[in-house]
Amino acid sequence: MRSSNPVFSRRGFSRDNGAYAGFDVQHQQAGANPYATNPYATDPATGMPQAPARVDAMTMDDVVSRTAMTLGTVILTATLAWIALPVDPANIGKSYGIAIGAALVAMVLALVQAFKRKASPALILGYAAFEGVFLGVISAATSTYLGAGVVIQAVLGTMCVFAAVLFAYKMRWIRVNRRFYGFVMAAAMGFILLMAANLLFSVFAGGDGLGFRSGGLGILFGIIGVILGAAFLALDFKQVEDGIAYGAPREEAWLAAFGLTLTLVWIYLEMLRLFQILSGDD
Image 1: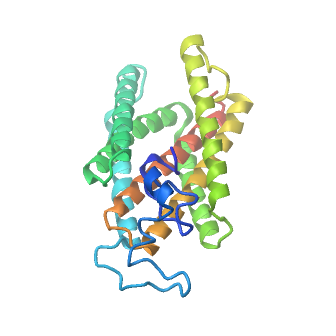
Image 2: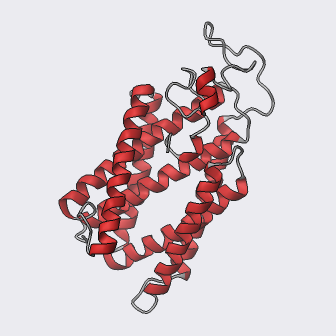
Image 3: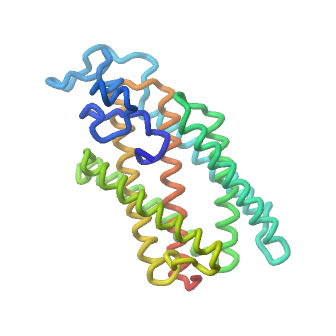
């Protein structure tokens, strides 16, 4: 994960010629941004486009509409899964099995898209659909055992994080540069490795493994996970801003939507786990 999500690992729209964001090795060696060096890039001296904007360039409307479609698919399938896969003692095994299967399919589709050079709307929407099934079952289980309030809190928390980061980014309180990118990537790698180790210990030793997802440590790592998600949102916003500024192809809007969806799903899951712990479900 070389950017806020794998989908941007080979695509950088940075104004500093890719100093912070994921260019492939060829572009790094050339020291050039594939969009910053095209005839539609802005003139660094005047800040004005060097040539008229091309018709098929990505716009903010494109990003918003694609993101709405992707998140809408997540919400729709999550709602259907919540209704069709009740989580109760008689069906919990079946529901959890379907949720795990959906999560695995979503992960495979996300990885396939991440390593493709071009956006595939079918893959992205397919990922959103299966991810929604997983989230629907997990949310339904949380609502059944802890009450719907926990799910509502997680949703509102995710929305608040998104709004706060967007406001801070627009106000330039968050400066996305090489140092910011490097710190976030290092922190994310450490976080993921710790969570993977905790999962392995829980599988082989039982319980909560190393205890990183329960009790006081669970609360601490839940907060860290939310903060990392917020940092990834800032990286996503930077990618979108630079893509529009440098006249990225319109198809890149699907990748922006994909990246934002990945990040928001991460934040929601961290929020959900955090509120589960705070509600007394260790």
